[in-house]
Length: 391
Image (tube, rainbow, N blue to C red):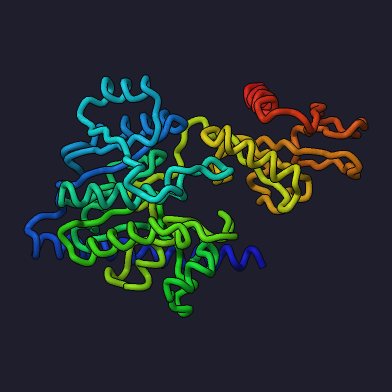
């Protein structure tokens, strides 16, 4: 069954690949005939960072440096709480960028607050930054998460944005997977479109000089400032993706732009390229100890962790039962660490490389066993994991 699903997915992706290439060709022809140019480089690139993701931002800016003036005119970086020395480094290393503090006081209180994972304001600040930039420069604006990277194929983004006036490739999952039901109901989203693929919240482009594009950007901003829509009660990251969910719903609801290209690779876009984000954690739901450990970890070490398993170097399973949910290709490619608890029947697993032993029994295994305690601080676990990764 899994092989059939994978084959169907490959067929669909191949279809998108063809459609994307056709879209690039037709957009090129349209731009040359209508606008007398292939693309417009009057583009503002916008990104943001706090102190935890400054290194990731530096990587992005190093990457963008080679394309400035050819693909875009300006880079605007919003400060979400970087340290003074990080700001000074930006000014010295990248003197041509525009650094701007985000004024949280202008927006609803929830945008300045972090959740138990350390996520700031459900990313509601992002649509606000994009619209602020559109309004100020009255040009095209492309948002890049600080963990993104581009290459020379990014020119195709500019070609399609010139023609379509909006751009955002597809992301994992569908609308009914990652948009909370209360939000869908309040936005009167048609049930016939629930199977549409999600767009990418961390990469999107708008054109101020197009009325429909400007409307979507403004509406996205306005909806994102409503806590009950972007962060509905009882929603989790497993069933709602904040700003990404709202943008996806708006694009499919209004259908202003027709077919939007899907495949990031064609357009020279890499996402989730965080340096040093080595750890992927997986826990059993509704377990008080595991939930607390998971939340404390992400509260303190979000910048060292990834929510995308293929980008990790080490998988930390907080419970042996979740191992079966991990694709085997990752279990063989990555270092796997697994927690073993008291009163738990131990059966050695061939995919596990290290065990964190919370019990007082000797585990019957030739793998390395590290004895730990339930009262360990997350900093203790970080040191152990760092040692494992370096060994």
